[in-house]
Image 1 (cartoon, rainbow, N blue to C red):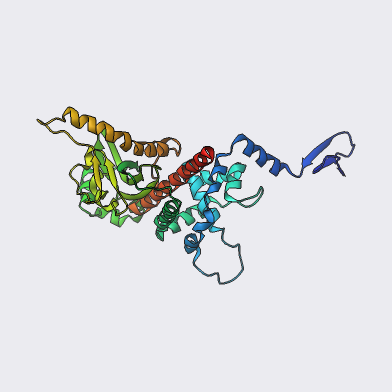
Image 2 (cartoon, rainbow, N blue to C red):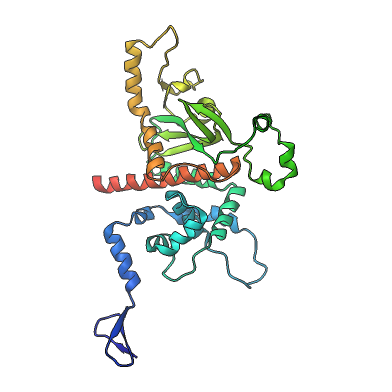
Length: 356
């Protein structure tokens, strides 16, 4: 039995005897979301980003024309892209992403779903991500957002910092002979015969060692604006490639001063760029006190790039790849750098509001 309550938006359900009742609040979702905002929903801060501006690029994912109106229509591409942002922010697998969106109202609000609406399943999320990877859309998305920040004057180019960090991949248990063949650009014959095994083997990732730590996977080479700590460019390589290999590709006409650690000593620098790379000592020729003091001054700026890597490691739950092959690594690394820029942008915008 139903009856209206004196409370607005409440319906009371009575049992047959009328001795007990249960209340249903028709505005429970709105009330709950309002409470989430009051408690400080971190995803709401990302609303300062114009995600709709990415739609033209994202529409390339669903470029096939539908032959008929039968069946379910495709999910909105901007919503699906926001799902990938969530996935990278919280370092979630496809299955966990589906579960967390279903479970959390803050996730649903961020991607634009109302309570009870159908959530994309794990396979749909994987397919959208794979399509973006194959069509190489993530780098244009990154470049578009960078251009937006430059137009707003957030990226100043008064100082540029470059560095690289390891991106670990699932370790491969290969024989020494198999590893030697992979290094030479060959595919072991046994793998060619077994297509299922080959599909699980990463022939692009490489082993390397640094400071007694062994890494297997790739490298994220980044170029960062010293003032804003925004990533302005990046490159993906296998882990064994030296940090300085991408250095010359990063420097352009807009760059004025370059900061880097001693690994970049000796690299050619354009004449219009001021060199503030930390100097390196050699056997029998250690750094002088003057050089050490100069390095300390340079490092006060250079260390700002470590804040970038620290945010990715701590706040974004690390940078690793679960995929196989450099093409998917490029997507994951590009998405990570883009989502970092989203987060950094929201921080800078809050600072603007605070400073008045």
